[in-house]
Length: 206
Image (cartoon, rainbow, N blue to C red; front, side, top):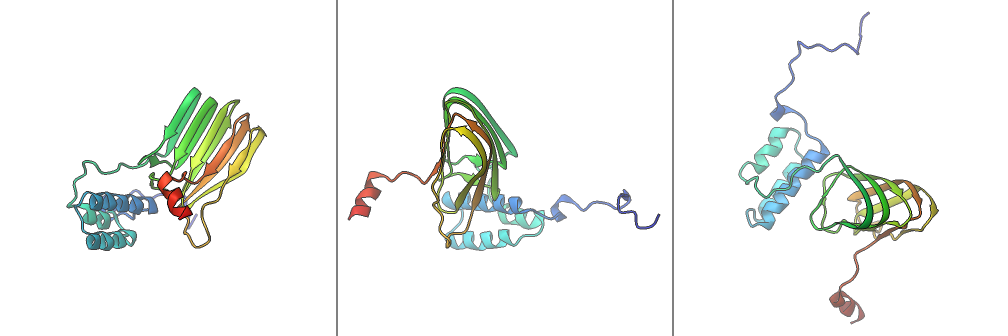
């Protein structure tokens, strides 16, 4: 049979890793390395802008490697995990600061308050899928910010509340879309922006 596309030809050598095409995730990770380096004073603002532009346009692993070859690996952000699972009963849980946002999360809570704070999180993917199983007393709070959108349309709940406060206007590009699925049989789901500090409240009233 001619034209059998299912057949693989082992005689065709694969290209070296340096010549292989990179993904959006690879580019985003390189950009985060550059930003951390600039924050440490290793790159000037002009160098950062030039390298970020080059990273976003990179096509191969070699292109990205060249942009970070003169930067130390120690202290640089690792790759985010594909899946993070949280199964907790009683107490409190929190992800805050510069935590790595994975591609998927599986969360099961009972008599537990869990907060996911995205305000300083390292975002490597454009979408975070969260599969929920909230039992009685299991509450989830998402602290969002500009460019972070929460979609809870596919949540099934028999008890509790779902409160999603939008924080992104049409002029702000979406950096991360958080898609919630699963069920709640006794917990609350809240998505809100960060709370204002006393200084911010004073400036607002002035």
